[in-house]
Length: 138
Length: 138
Image 1 (tube, chains in turn yellow, green):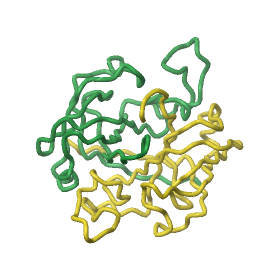
Image 2 (cartoon, one colour):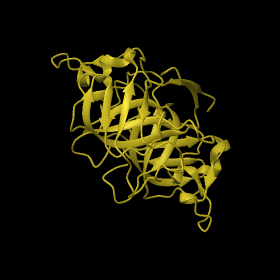
Image 3 (cartoon, helix red, strand yellow):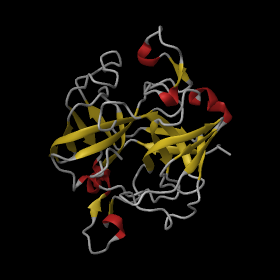
Image 4 (cartoon, chains in turn yellow, blue):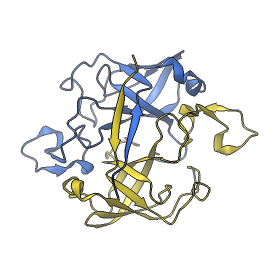
């Protein structure tokens, strides 16, 4: 039934002052630094209508993740009971796709500056989608 | 630079009354039917702490998508100018990962009933993450 395998291909990479997972704040209230999204020229047409001020959903590939993990102590706190990964934002999970809601601060050709991105330098980018207006999220 | 390729593996599939893309409402105000997420037994541990009432982010693989598309007429309306896919929610895009914010209505072992899901029957599931409290989305 669930034997499907599919190939995803990086369309860009994150350029960030964050260089290690220990530096990257766990998702929550801490926030992260501004960072550049640097895209492959092959996808340039896809970026053309992006503009400063837009809120977007960024999907990344968390390439340092352990894909065998199904349960974690939330936020790495051993005092908290192990929790199934689909009820957490643990980067370690079967398909380590990162999800980040950010704001576009500037567009410079293939380079897009975004706010508050919790992803380490070099993280592959898989997709970008707009936040749909009028809904709490989407 | 952006030559990375990665394999994603379905961890479940959508069971929905929607059977074709033409039946599936375009994302926006229309909403969709309730649907079941049916998971592979191999990931059961990951699901254990999911419960009715939780809001979650579902990531799917839009396996009917055209991955060569970089620009579309939004909502299929030829009267609207072609727009780069990263500024739309077109399912046709280089990495056709669907993003759906849904509410868990019921949990029955490997089967999870969710509200308002705009995905066709058989759509592969890649991931599930909680909506983080206190933020407009995440």
